[in-house]
Length: 256
Image: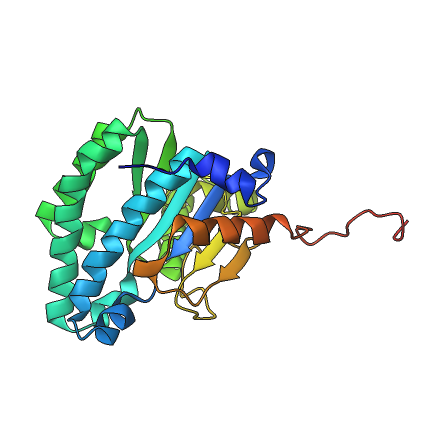
């Protein structure tokens, strides 16, 4: 089977390969709508979305993206029907087991964020094994947010900071942005440069609230199971056409 050279294809489509985003985050929306449009159960949409995950991970690794963050299961997703939640948990566990050899072969380091201690013991064990087995991989970091909420992450960080203040390990006067960053779930990961949301919703849905303060947003109507590497390349081209100021003013001849 013929495979695509995604670096060459990206360059052909106008991507400056010297200015790739280091960290891309994705909100994988539209699985349920994809399934309903075809008369399937919502879980069929989630299963098909799993194929897109593999394409994005391997494609981003080939392009040279350092980190890919995926919003896998939010703290709010527990409100969905129990049948769907149970199916999603089974899909997560099965995918983590089945995809691990693929991730190892392709140099993918896997990291997880969220209130993992609230998941089943079986799923926690599978996730820990995936982290341990890929800890030395360096081609790309796959960061999966499971039972994750941006507000929950900040609450957990504030609790940890309060405990350290109470124990005398930290002075309140020493708390700054760097301190808070150090107490996040994955403090060493760079902030996302680009956040892509599929299925057209115009919100960030409690994903990486601290980390996306100056992240560029790209919204596409394409449903997650239909999202392709060509769509990703379009998003990167759009991202590279923007001017990132981080709250400052661009220095141009006209502004001097």
